Image (tube, rainbow, N blue to C red; front, side, top):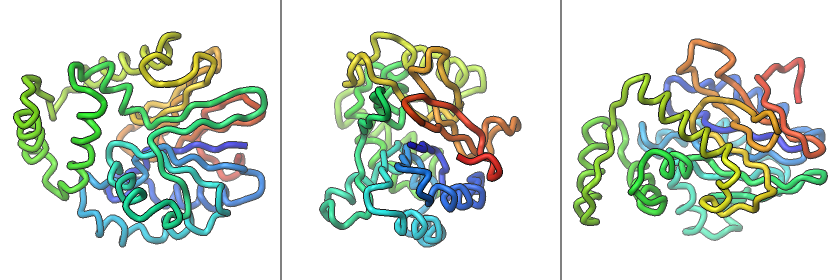
Amino acid sequence: MIIVASDVHLGSQNSNKQEFMHFLDLCDSPAVDRLVLLGDILDFWRRNNASVIVENSDVLEKIGRMKPGKVHYIVGNHDYYILRLSKRYASDYFHFPVSKSLRLTDGDSRFYFIHGYELEVLANLEPVSIENYESFCDRMCFSEDVLGEYASNLWNWYENRKGAWWKVKVIKSGPQIREEVNRIEALAKSKGKYLLLGMHPGEKLVFGHTHDPFMCEDGMVANSGSWFNEFKNSNHQNTYVKIDRGKMEVKTFDENNFP
């Protein structure tokens, strides 16, 4: 059985940290073979990196105590710096492998895991490349508590350095965000997405990033949602993807009905 969770944003005041800690306790059992942390578990964009680590050491301790080989960490845009750390200190430094994507097989099905910022770049930020956006994400992990104006100035500096002409809007309205999420989901559900994402046509896609959990009717695409209380609808919080015998299911965490 594979359990997938993303977008906890530890370090933000809106993170459902206590519920996620309880979730981790239940994941640390023989019933769960693999736990895929699908990015933005930590939020380095909003806070000083060391402060985020210190304040969430209890969560990281739980993850670090799990059986070696059980945890896979896929970096998101808000915790992209972890990828650099994993390369800096070599793979044996980390208790778990860190990567930008992951392939796993369960039953007769093959699964491809990404955080999902790649889909946002492709669907909404063209002509920004995924590589340029990843460079921006790495720099944003050092922005501490000055996201607004700093983010805009940093991106403007970066685009001028690259000689690009495009702009990124930092502040967006609700309808704009919904429209952009719809474009991301449309790309994720597209039969031709494999060409842009480096996946095989027959693989099932699992991603997060949008904080909007869903699963396609054909069972080929799932979004893990978030553990972040930005939505009034409780169905949009504390969600995860369960993969068992090759089949995916998006679930809301309930300690009495887990996994």
